[in-house]
Length: 393
Ligand code: MLT
Image (cartoon, rainbow, N blue to C red; front, side, top):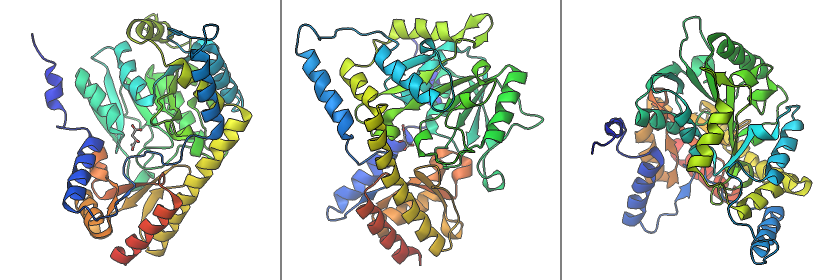
């Protein structure tokens, strides 16, 4: 028996696990510390009433012979796929039901989709980057190239004359920087991928935070994207499903490489390795896309966005440089006085009892940056900003 030695090339632990351990050990030594968590992008507001009602209804269904559900379709129930189809239609994106796959969240599908791609593909990611894109490819042993995302390009790298690669990861609005591509920029990416016969893996997990008509919610708003892109989205941030688990992946039927349709391959992969998301969860998820559910969900997003504004105002007052916080729940803050991000993490944890995410955890270009999330409560956000003012003034 031989182990997958690629695992030896990974950092010893996943970024957010590492942070959780450091915070737990600080809390153990300082039990009185009132720590405010603005690190991992985890939500704090409970599920909206429309979702709760649908979940209860689904539990009831499972209690009766006539409405009980056993194994469901691996690709997801039509009632949820149709709801998602309708959601895209509102953005003028036409999807067939066959394009839509229900999964347990974007992270799993982003990793699992790699089953479809040859190991000698070159992967291109921005730096800084959501670590899952990198780690899942390191596990498989694929070659990874980095595109610089920094202050000079507003953390939005574009294809250059010498850009080459097979699989390109784009996340917009971006995790960790909060920067978002506009229509013109995404059009350039789609044209580039089609010319190169490359594939874009587009992570739209934060699309619900967009309220600017010039920023697309989906890459499929761009003509030609059906021939070169797969899109991942999740209800984790959209509707507070981080603990429920439900997401969706769009694999257009047109996508073909080496004579193989990725959509058929994904069906084959999912039917073989996945038994689908639970009926109860999918019923809750479908309620998100109802008129009432969507209104309730958007009210929660408005609440988080207000937190983002509170944070942005504080950093403006302090004269600090930051990105994001506009169509995104993340503020990407430049550490003061060229501090390194883990030093700033320690300062914030120890002096202000605030947890953020050190930028270097997302790549070399994050070395002097610190990510804060707006997913906490308004009270905690206000309190955190008072503490920040005290230590950074
Ligand atoms: C983050 O904090 O980057 C996200 O919550 C991680 C995730 O969605 O997996």
